[in-house]
Image 1 (cartoon, rainbow, N blue to C red):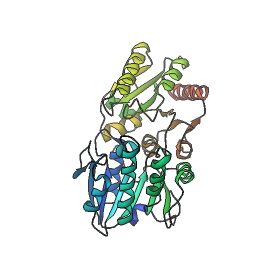
Image 2: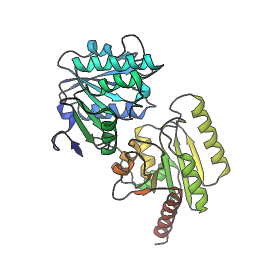
Image 3: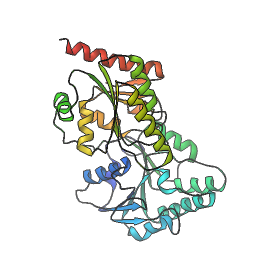
Image 4: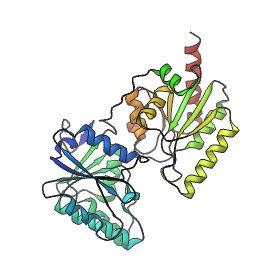
Length: 351
């Protein structure tokens, strides 16, 4: 899916030149970093991808985008004629008070005016006012190309920042280049994971984070407990994305919920790409009852693996939902959806 300013048959990644300086938080516990690596692997033919990691993660080399030269480092990292591909999440690049944040925006604006920038907007910018807002608007109108995962997020960005002269705004399906090496069917996947073959299993999977976006674990737990169906199980799989107080509180809450319910199991573990896909294949449905989200890599992988999704109606998730998915608008609809999963499993087991 390619929509927006570019020709529908032309992927923005195909427009990248022979040397691409790709900026992200390259870390095993970062979904955007994984996205960046998968994009590079899919489009590596005839291209060299140089990974520039922010301070907290690995890469071919590291840059501190929070102080000093900030994004001006990219003028040295990228030669004239190179493409700079920035995977954008505000938490990666924006720290400190107003003047620190304004300096970061200004450094990106200068760098993008002197190099060819493509920015993948994984999460929206906070768009504050005052001096910071003025400099932020200058930055966002400077890159040659902005890539979004939903039309809603693109339109929201336009309302906040407008569009630069000759700037391309493109909508690309999240994970359109994803691939999987998992060949197991649902029964095989469950056997490998030690899961029962006769239960209805709904899954929440991904890094555990107590900060934005709010993934709505409590909503899923409440729905499964309210269903009160002994054949229905919720499995929550993931590891902490970082060590902070909010994430510690979340994990404590999840542990308590799992201890209090026979229908809820917390698998507090890091899962690599193959194990991640194995869990999705094993589930009857993947839950994304998020309270905030621009788009979801979990939803994209569920589509790739043929597992239906029950998702909330926030951000770009409605647009991302496929024909086999269920979009819920409140907790009552979420409860009804998980009950249908249990009933469908019961019906298939009785045949």
